[in-house]
Length: 118
Picture (spheres, one colour):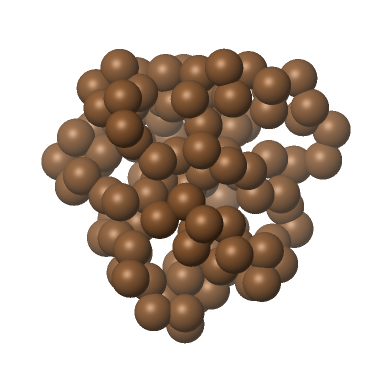
């Protein structure tokens, strides 16, 4: 069972992810609505895995990923992407992302990726 931090500016996306993860035995220990909040919650909660939306207000997922990786080079961050964000996915890999999830979410894919990363 992984302790997971969910980062997404969409309340609906956070709820869907939370339900899928909790239904499969994982613990959601926190949520953040933008990159700034994500970095702060990461530091406070030390999750096993962080799911990180790329497109968010205030600080996007790529900037938050860079900051988290500078705090903890072993951080496991799974980037959440919408279709058509290929260049951002390439950047995310350069910055240390562990894996990717695509929207719309598929429960099987999410659990498979979380278990692989964990």
